[in-house]
Image 1 (cartoon, rainbow, N blue to C red):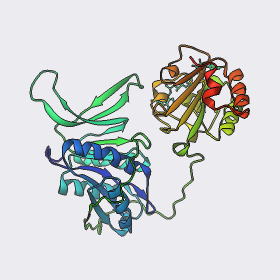
Image 2 (cartoon, rainbow, N blue to C red):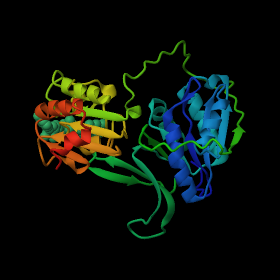
Image 3 (cartoon, rainbow, N blue to C red):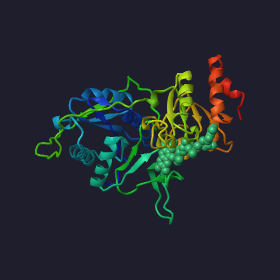
Image 4 (cartoon, helix red, strand yellow):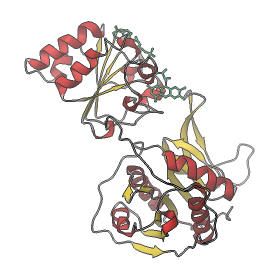
Length: 353
Ligand SMILES: Cc1cc2nc3c(=O)[nH]c(=O)nc-3n(C[C@H](O)[C@H](O)[C@H](O)COP(=O)(O)OP(=O)(O)OC[C@H]3O[C@@H](n4cnc5c(N)ncnc54)[C@H](O)[C@@H]3O)c2cc1C
């Protein structure tokens, strides 16, 4: 634990693998910039690895004022113990008030280890981060300018705001795609602060012989248009309708968790709280009820078209266009209209609600 320190910086863990930054630290820097300006403090990054110095420029362009650079041959590949030791040493030395990590495989391994070593607490999978005050229920001192760590709780039935006012740093993880990515500013200037550490004599329990990575089958985050199917599609065979509409629109196909669990489409295609968060120009939801966990992953889409046989389905509450009807009839009609040259908006407008 470090002492409560209201002048402390905001830090982001700049996750990289094989010398390539993942998207999530860049997204966290975009959000971190907003939070740092609100608090009037600096935005820093922890960049660990071996031969990774060149990545600092991208972090500065994305909003970092300082990059704490730790290069060590034994940090070339991620290992929990070595990385956790270095991150804890950096926190003790520089006393940031907030530390943010991506909720990636590495972030989910590292952040709890650091939080446990620092005895400070951690909120996982935040869907929003804000700065605000907290007045304890029984009265007493108002805690000012805390990190409000916002996330769904109790199966998504409530949105909880979690705070930590006395065991610092305040720590949170955020899933990839949740925070919008701002445009990099290549003219920004930042400081690179080399932090010499030695892991000599520090025992790393694993010897990594070889690492193999499999690519995801689909990059939903990059898709401009997404056609997603849910349990209402009825079967894996019938999911062909969703693929056909997606092909016709040059879109990526996706599914709700129910569609994935039912085996209609592979898990890489899942949208939502435990899938991918997407913000395409157009999201077409077919036979999806619009549970809060699904909406959490798609309601930032610029335009949403929902097709559902139930007029009371909650997907309609976030949709810009809605078609009440059986998707087995509606999708072929949409495909026909689009092939005739209609835009999806024109095709949907006939049955707009
Ligand atoms: C911790 C947690 C995490 C979760 N994470 C996710 C997540 O990441 N993503 C996600 O999607 N869900 C997630 N869920 C599950 C979520 O709560 C819902 O169960 C799920 O989204 C429901 O999927 P669905 O809308 O496809 O199915 P249903 O809720 O069963 O809805 C099917 C819809 O299809 C409609 N329909 C049926 N037949 C037709 C037809 N012929 N034509 C048109 N419409 C029809 C029905 O009216 C209904 O609205 C999570 C749940 C929990 C507890």
